[in-house]
Image 1 (cartoon, rainbow, N blue to C red):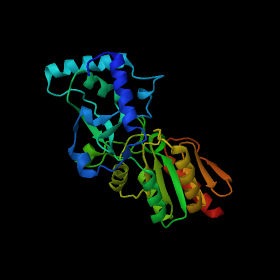
Image 2: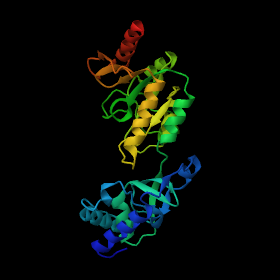
Image 3: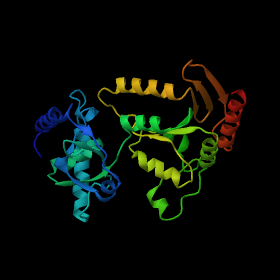
Image 4: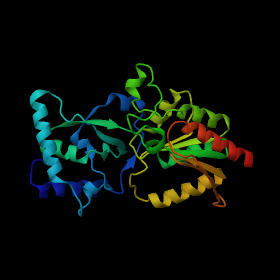
Length: 294
């Protein structure tokens, strides 16, 4: 695959033609995700919905060339190369769909490398959301953004103590100080907790992370930023199902708590006065206010 850019683009176009409208994401399972760290390059398939595959955008060959140079240098000193794994999900009819790392995969292909390191994830599917809604017994929920609210974005931000060894080497995300206490409070008050992230995490990874902090998360919705064919209609259907299940949703962010009545679209707002010290207690105070108005 070391041919011209035109030949490579023809190869991508053929891959898209073969898999677009045919592939179906399937669960890889915990054992496969734990054991498989390298995969054959020809078992990885470009994502038809990624800009990398768009004729108007396409591969950035400068980035591909930089990765090729980096891989060559790394191979001079080690059998390994491409320290950052390509993020993929298992698909039918075969192989893995690339979620993040198209240019690294392209560099490995064009160098003639047979394998590349991968991280296999199981993103939240439509069926996962339907299963959550069918199994929960509560009629109110709280939603939070993992990336912007729950996980610490700065090394200087107040954070929970790291998990004990060896779990701290598995779960490296730092939780905002007070999040476990807040989630425990919400669990006791009968709220379902739904967390959202644009990151490519396996949903069960997020569930297990919070279990290590002795709290329960009802739904972990991962990979929210990805484009999926037909996603607009699916999103509309799931939104209607959520509104039917939960008359009330409370959304918590850094600055405010919003109480949303899903059927009437009425909104109550509680200002938190900032995201600094005491943030979790202020969220709980807001929740008490909502409870007193119920």
